[in-house]
Length: 355
View 1 (cartoon, helix red, strand yellow):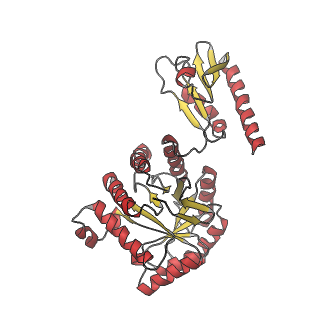
View 2 (cartoon, helix red, strand yellow):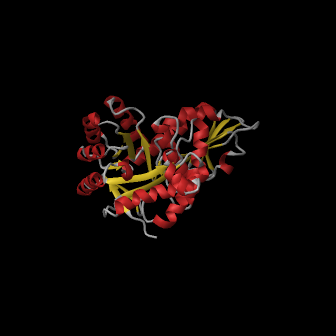
């Protein structure tokens, strides 16, 4: 099935485009300075789409300013008020997220759709397990996954009957089985539309990372997902970094270098954590897809990490540096660290010259 492409600003979503990583501002739009700071952080992290809560018409000037300021396309998040949707579009925001079913009367929804068409604004619709109505739950006999599908279909019909096509679909739940099944069912019928995926309210720290990773991996391996958000109780940048790591691990998309490091054992001859911490700022500037290894001993070093483009491993006498499984230098710890930094700087310089 050929997938449609929608365009949010200069960002293509769907079709043959890569899976996009998005996040959401976690500060109120009323604090414009804090919003800009988070935008800057997200831009530096590689984030490609940012959702921003737009709860009150008094904030329209702030939304307009943020839309002008942001190098990342924005998506205004709107609930229950068609006037907010109109204001967001008029402010220049290139995409909005809403439920067409709660945008007022039929004529008021007509106004939103007409203005979106005129301004080539993309509309993301979808359902969340926490906001399903009693009527929809009853019509699905309490099956939350089917209820999510019904809710999304109702929203989609409202836009399609108005001949609006620039749509992204989304179905989210904090319960993995409901989220996965609803997306699978929707993809069987509407797989030509771009899908936004995520496990909502996945939680803090490692709990949220594991939960999101399990759910997103299943969907992505099914070919479902054109944009994703890892919804963590953490900073927006943490969400973006986790999203890119998920895509890298699945072999879907490279972003930045990959670090290969051993878990360590009683054979270790080098402090892996200390070396990674010391070299991380340099490692993060290596090219996309570059594999950098830090291994505890010569047993695991060039052998188990032979796929690495560059690596370092502990030895009885200090450290060895290796490339693609071949040792290129062997010496005392400080000497090897200095040499490794020179090699990385040389790679950085070659990369800049090639740009």
